[in-house]
Image (cartoon, rainbow over all chains, first blue to last red; front, top):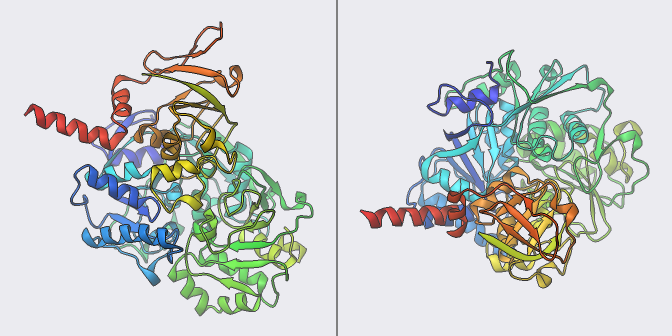
Amino acid sequence: MGMTITEKILREHTELKELHSGMLINARVDVALGNDITAPFAIEEFRKAGGTAVFDRDRVILVPDHFTPNKDIQSAAQCKVLRDFVNEQNLTHSFEGGTVGIEHALLPEQGLVLPGDLVIGADSHTCTYGALGAYATGVGSTDLAAVMLTGEAWFKVPESMKIVLHGSLRRWVSGKDLILYIIGRIGVDGARYRAMEFTGDTIARLGMADRFTMANMVIEAGAKNGIFIPDAVTEAYVRERARRKWRFYDSDPDAVYASILDVDVSRIEPQVAFPPLPSNTRGISEVGEIRIDQVVIGSCTNGRIEDLRIAAGLLKGREAAPHVRLIIIPATPGVYRAALQEGLLEIFLNAKAVISPPTCGPCLGGYMGILADGERAVATTNRNFIGRMGHPGSEVYLASPAVAAASAILGRIAGPDSL
Amino acid sequence: MKFRGKVWKFGDNIDTDAIIPARHLTTTDPAELARHCMEDIDPEFARKVGAGDIIVAGENFGCGSSREHAPIAIKAAGISCVIARSFARIFYRNAFNMGLPIFESAELWDRVAGGQHIEADGGGGKIIIVGSEAQPLSIEPIPPFMQELIRHGGLMRHIAQKKQQSQGRK
């Protein structure tokens, strides 16, 4: 019987010869990560279990990205727990101050996660690395603690669902629009426990940034992991970054899928997910007149240089509407530097934007752009749950960088064609 | 392993930001997290809920973030177990790892009202609605090793206990 890419990667990390969906397996982990919210718990549990040294100091990566630069005394204390542990364990990869970036943008950029890897992270958006053809899934802090101790984790091998994307993208339609559309089709639990495997002729024309965005949001459909079959685009991205070997896997033609969803992308227009669920999507032409107070362009979903280029292309020579606070957050120091060198930051400043250092900040209602009761934001982030970006009476509309930039300029939710 | 308590009913897709808003994630103190449990849906929940009470919810309970603060907040608020139509994957794993028992039941949500009392028998695999003549609802029983894990207070405490036991035997 044929195997999916997900099954093959998992098998390669066990001693098993045969492996199929539904099996419980114990697997070797290549990279384990945590952040300033989840690592302190994991560190506490690690110590309680008698842990003194992590299984491999090259492979445990802790990034203080959520509430940094430290937003208050309590978060400073959390970051200190993480930092002290990184120093005590002498972890190879350590991030502080101006080297901190949003973990799921930072790790691929730095070549720290690679195709064929098995990655677990105490953060639900760990699934982002599936864009590289890696198996990556989010877990809780306790599971991270166990991996830090042993280098292994147990998994139930997920069934896969195949998402076949074919056709050409319309202008302004990006990976963000595709994944929002798919979540809208299948619902926030439409892929619960499953692997979402993206294939079809459209994929070859999607750059890595679009693929990261799509894999990033599979958790919003309840998926265990999202995955792309690596190709020449992956190869070009990885070759200039990797400092260790990687391996490409593919799905067999006779691999078994729980379901297949066929999507003609040429029919998709830019999408907006209305509160309070990412599945609550509408095409931009069906949005109506919705006045907004804030726009956030950034996050692990859409804070890459490609995203900022799209935003800058629209904001060039224009300004955010007077009643709109436009907040732009390059996801990593590398993205920040590129934006500086390419002149994007000047475009943003001229457009009356606030430029934030890399941080998860407002995406999860941490800081750097919290909404008051009744306020509305368009955000390139990944969740629009009640109270996600601030007051429970505020609203978040999820969209692509293009729609976010156009909305900032017009002061209402709108696509670039309205400019 | 039996849990008896008053029912607090919630709908579908109760996400981790609803269970514990991210603005409170600057602490890992269970008592502090419990004070804010469910506050964006029901600001009074933490004050009203009693020790041993039970959450009954719809589909996909615990969707969203991987934060273990969510099952911790629920457990520390006094909730003895959560019974939902279905659970989001990461929450499911985290709940057991934190020692919070959870059960899937396709039927219970339609059969019970908030404020009623129920008894969930995790070992026996059934739920009784207290004061009702109806047949007990069956649920997938929690296997003995998972019951032990819950009794020990979660995965890491369970591992520590097992380690102590095996050292004691030597």
